[in-house]
Image (cartoon, rainbow, N blue to C red; front, top):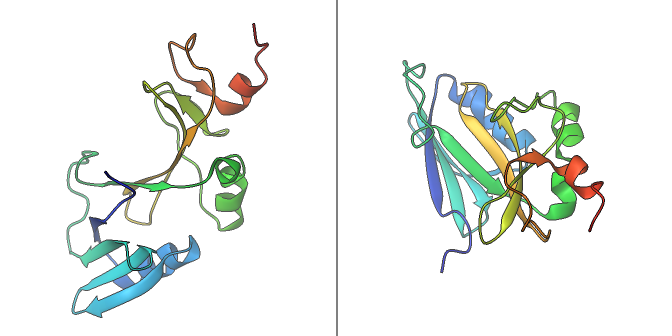
Amino acid sequence: MIKGLYEAHLPVKDLKRSIAFYESVGLEVAHQGPGLTFLWIEKGKSWLGLWEAEQVNVPYHASLRHVAFQVEPEDIKRAKQWLADKGIEVKEAFGFAPTGPIVLPNRPHAHAAIYFEDPDGNLLEFICPIELDTSSLTQMIYLEEWENKPKS
């Protein structure tokens, strides 16, 4: 049923700075109002609401301050460099150094993901389903390492 993300909302301290950040990663302004802006993730289908707030440094919890954007498998492989070209650092995730995408062995499908933050510390993720035989995969691994692993 679910085909993508309909909407997500994040608190931001400086709305103008945050709009520039999200435009730099490919989102487009859909609507602006006093203290809030909606940006298209997929035009006409899903958007991100940014709400300007004085206090954005509240305790972090992924259910409140995390957005995952679906990307294509070929794009996840170049995501670290793409983000670096925009001055955005990839973040450590699940104990993995920020060297590249990791494979999440979710069943029944595996996913590759890479994590980064917006200017207010909201955790963002590029994620895509991947077609890999993960039947023998019991823990997370770097995507590059998994792709170069000898197949039995």
